[in-house]
Image (cartoon, rainbow, N blue to C red; front, side, top):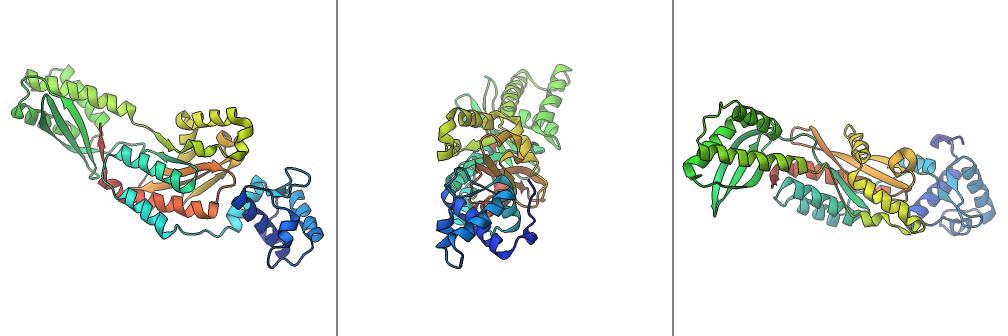
Length: 353
């Protein structure tokens, strides 16, 4: 069906269209001509309103799920509304405080991102999603501190100011001088490298017998390599919280499909690819229903915004997933605000094992 450019719609059609979309997004229910006729400022009879609704339906902007159930926006109509009519509402003071409070708490990077996802889910009543930075920080230094009882804490410092911690099992004979020797040796391999690159370089040294380490120090380095390598493979690419929010009333009739969707969200590379497509956006991007194949069957929408480090480089994406009848005007600025807050505070966080 042909689309209708916003500037070609007359004032009456625009206003009725806006009221239908806003009414549907607010209630999740189709909006009828009788309800529209009682709206302040609409000086039209129900019959005249039905005529306008029929025209908008013919243009593909509205649909009638049942003969007498009123109208609801199609995906085309939602896109037209979002791009040309929506007036965004900035996050409330309470929402901004809640977001900033969560972002201001120090802790491991993964914990911070998981909390961000959970917080977005709570504030939006959707599934909150965060794409973890795809690249590891380049590291500059490592120190090892004894914790006693056969354990030590390895502290790795990144060029971006991030701090990552790993707890290691310490072999017998690994006293303070040994810990210092290991820290100095690893640090010489870390500078300017990611952890994965440093691990590869250390393994080559050990294999070629070029490492000037005594037995206890070599044992500790090998233990550390095992821990760090395992940790790197476990780092999540996608953190999702609040999937149960996808089970809205409209999904009850097809629970198996929605359960499958929830499973897909947590493991599908397509979700990461979808979020990655928002990396170059200056602000939030909106994907409505079948505009993305992954969520087309479930009638879900995605709002995603990139977050940046202190140098302005995009390092990840944060967003929400929910039904197409999202409150876009409220959620778009909320996602944007969360992305900015996360980027500002990311340097505070460190990683942990």
